[in-house]
Image (cartoon, rainbow, N blue to C red):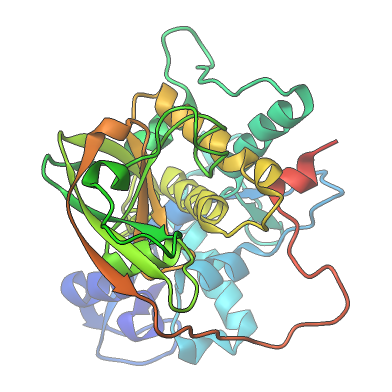
Length: 370
């Protein structure tokens, strides 16, 4: 059996057939004189991404989906011209999965033809949920713990994959609202850095009384983060880092360039799912008055980052278009200069919502609390 590049939908597979295939007849669409490759040449690549799924066996809670549906939905294996023919899609993808397999070396091979499958993408997220549930029920702070002595905790490995370096003299921004209408002088630069120890309230990344240096990637994001009111005067400080810092970056998870040849595809898919999950927890606004409970998830996450030796965390701002970085060591950055702005306009964008609650989605800490 052979397939031509026109029957494929993924750019990586199309390039492979066009660059290495020979002209011949396609057994899928029947066209002649197209660049084709045998199923056995593409089968191992399809099986590589099929590792991201596991067969549902004796699971009464999850029924799963056919493997051809998952592969086509997630990886666009076949072209759009073929997907309307469900039987052809099934025959082709099952044929590719089976091509070149030596079942003598597999005592219990997956039943691709009639079995149902679930994604493995949530395994890391489920491990995080287990850790969080243990914290919420026991009120014991999370800690890194390898499965065996001498082995790193799985989240140490996760953080390493998301780590990035900010060199010395990196530039950020930090804002402070002028709240005293009688103030005539600019703030001293020393008052535009992190709040002093013992004064800070509970925050997204630290418990009450623990100072953290929050900075933004640009001035407009720094402005949005302090939520100024109309006509408010706001100081915007330039923050310069005094040393190099290594942080966990929850904004730029590496793309999977070619999943069919990536030996770490299962791990990377799980990382991407966990990345979206944790980014949401760190960036979502909280309701005023409920900060202590709603910060539980992100505080424990950042506690693990501290324990793993990181200097901070970068995450997407929910109020501005840029990113925020929270440095655990307030001495990492210092204000170098400041300028002042006055807010002259507020733009509120809205959309209709149901008048029947709940008005907000359930957050993870609410779902897991006993």
